[in-house]
Length: 153
Image 1 (cartoon, helix red, strand yellow):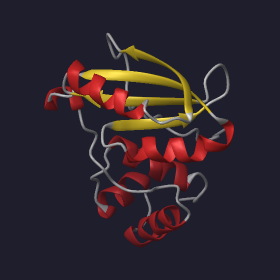
Image 2: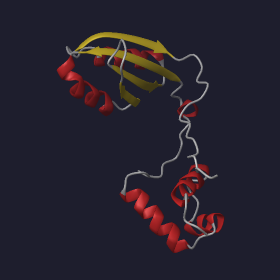
Image 3: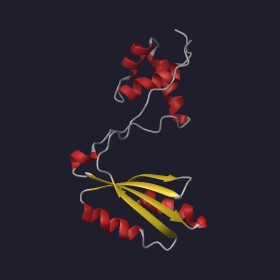
Image 4: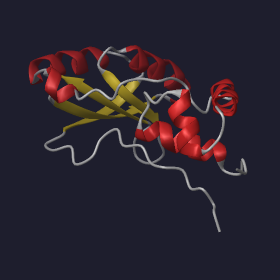
């Protein structure tokens, strides 16, 4: 087999089954276990694959309130504010963005009281000039991954 697109095929296989063994990956991709192991190690070393984690359905664990926070932040304080948000236990995503707001953060909560308390705590930061919070009514899609293009002709 040619190794063209092997890394992309390996990533796509792991996206389908993150618990696949090296042997099953090798069989699926028609390469040796050693080849899979070497390519996988390279992808890990390059930071392409950063870990192997379960995909958790927070709703089923009682975290069925999702909040989207939009924040305007004093310019020089942006790194500090995003770092504080990153460290908040229930913030699952934090983004620096363009547009009307500087930061968008997504949080998961067990109830609106807990959400309200945590958001009020966050908003005590003097570097946050303005905020807008939305509660998600329905998550149409969440935490989706996509297969890499293989550029096959």
